[in-house]
Image 1 (spheres, rainbow, N blue to C red):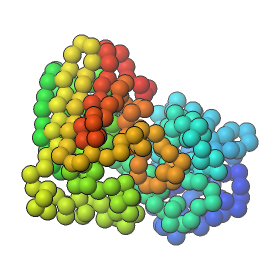
Image 2 (cartoon, helix red, strand yellow):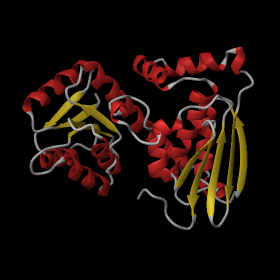
Image 3 (tube, rainbow, N blue to C red):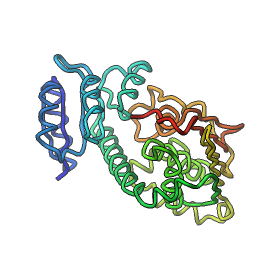
Image 4 (cartoon, helix red, strand yellow):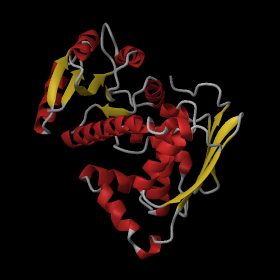
Length: 299
C-alpha cells in the first residue's frame, strides 16, 4: 500500500485528508508538527508522497522543504496552503514544491493532485535510472538532429539529449517537457483544459494514441536539434502546430496551482535552462544552458 505522510497542525484537516486518502487506497502517516513529520520521514523510507501544510508552529513547510532538499530523499511534495498568491507560490517553487492544494478542497481535487504528483515522482525516478545508460559515449557528441512523432519517442530522445550535458539529471525533465509539449499541444492540439480532463479521467495516453492515428496528423513531426560548444548548449524544438499562448505558462498562476497539469514549462524555465525563448507563435522553442563547464541551476 502506498504511504502518504500528512503533516498539518490542524487535527480536523488531518482527519479529513486521512479519510479521503483511505478511500483512494492510500495509507496515511500523520504528523501534527513539522519536526514530528521530519522524524517520521526518517523512520519510514518507503513514504511515497508528502502532504505538507505551509503554515505551522516550530517548523513550517518552507523550512521542512529546505531540510528535505539538503537530504538524499527524493519524495514529491504537495503543499497545503490558503495563500495561493503569486509570491507564496514562487517561494514554494523555489524550495521544490510544484503541486498545491488550496484550502478548502474537494476529494476529487485531492485525488487528482495526489495521483499527478505520484506519477511525476515515479516518472522522475525512471528518468534518472535511464540516464545512467551509455552516458559516457553520448557526452562526446557535439551536434545531433532528430525527427519524431510520439511521446514514447520523445522520452527516448530526452535520455539521449540529457546525457550531452555536464549534469544530465538537472536538465532531463526540462527537455522531456518541451518535447512532449510539442507532441501533445503542438502537433496533436491537446490544450491545457483538455489535458487536465484527460489526466483526471486516466485517458491521456489513449487520447494521444487516438490523435496520432488521425489522417490530419500522419505527416506531423517534431524537429529537434542540439548544438554543443565550449560556451553553451542550445536545444531547438519545433512542431507543426499553430502555436499557443506561451506567455501564460512561463509562471505558475494562482488559478492553475491546484490543477494536475500546466507547470512543466515554468519548471523547465526556472530550474533546467539558463534561457528559454519561444519563437513567434510558440511552435518553436530555444533552450540554452550557458558555459557548460559550470554546474546548472539545480543542485
